[in-house]
Image 1: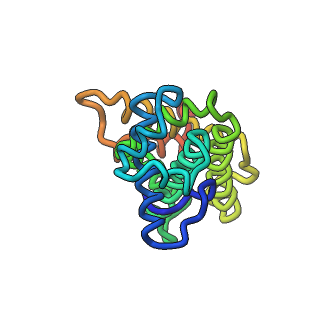
Image 2: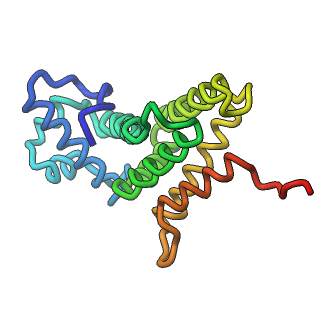
Image 3: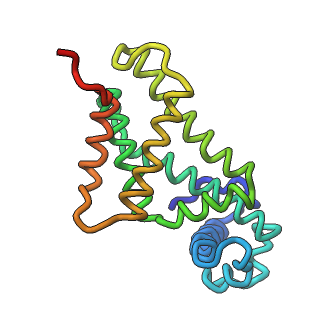
Length: 206
């Protein structure tokens, strides 16, 4: 992940400092994913990062602080993946398909996100809530724009955005975290979810 989403850390002043901060966040990802928050340790994080223990406290005050920064970093990673996948020429439906595909690919590359975000519900509820509220707001804005240009129904808002987010999150859980041999490709999954948005599940009236 790139150097975004680290506003909860002490801001590095040099490129070397930014690289050290990135190493600490990446190491924390694996430490928390492998051991959970309570059994993870600052020394384990610095060992994985290959930096001195003192370097940790240059950027973070505690294990809690780096956990909060990591949740924020992951949220930024999800948003960044979606932004990179979306092109101005796409229709509103194509945007949702591309965003879902990007999320599934991001989750496949960073499977730790599910354990860490789920644990945040108990370790740091504020970060947990902020993660989902931030993503929900992004989706809501996309739905609003689609409604304004006539591609989506008018008046879509938060309930629809959270419904879409729920679809995305649980598709990632089932087809990335719990992937099985013979599952559809991520592109097909994104396409089928997109068809659901386009036409719903009710049988056509004849």
